[in-house]
Length: 282
Image 1 (cartoon, rainbow, N blue to C red):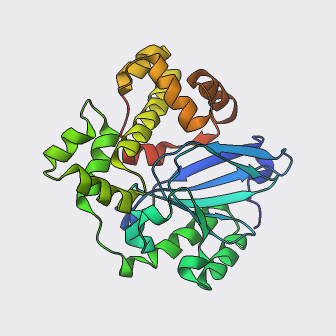
Image 2 (spheres, helix red, strand yellow):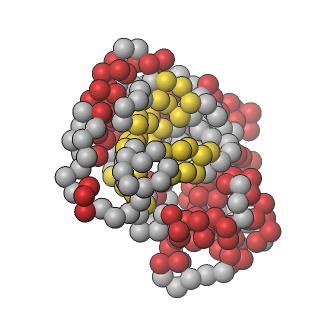
């Protein structure tokens, strides 16, 4: 893939940028994104925490892959000069486009050729031949747009569950199921098919993502203690937050925020996906 025209002016070792998807994709997709590692940089260890999403990802020079919802932290080594683009589906929306239950993707990465056959090779060629990151993203987005004519209906009950757990609040999954007038068993079955995770696990992941968003907001504004942030997003106390942070990221909250400050602050822009799922933090 050809370098961006402005690449020679970039001094950051790696950057990640998100954009809102094509309007027709917004019921299904929270964002499209591109990440680039500078040619003069070292190998970059890109670490991610579970967020409940399925992604279609393509690194220039390789075939596209579908990354299922994760339950544990993951790490990928990106070589100097790497350009990776992706489409991030809204939690619960991937099956409508991909045509298979998200439960079959949980914790897995599969080649897009398993879903789309030889057309996945054509997609990889278009990404590799793109002259900018935006053009590479557009190639991936166009591939998803081509699937809309065969898209299945979204599970509206799961979509409402997803909305509620991302908004937060003190409601338990049992209370949410009752308010939706569905049994816990049915809610679990439908959530696992649409999201790839059970409703309680999805709620735990959404709560931790709210913590990350709130921590970033307060770092940029007034600042706040970990204990106060933990209580605001629904943890019993700071120790509860710490246990969840280790489970989902492998690091304590303080270690995680220090790493984010060092590697992500000012060079990773997650505004598009966060505005779609969480709105603006208070």
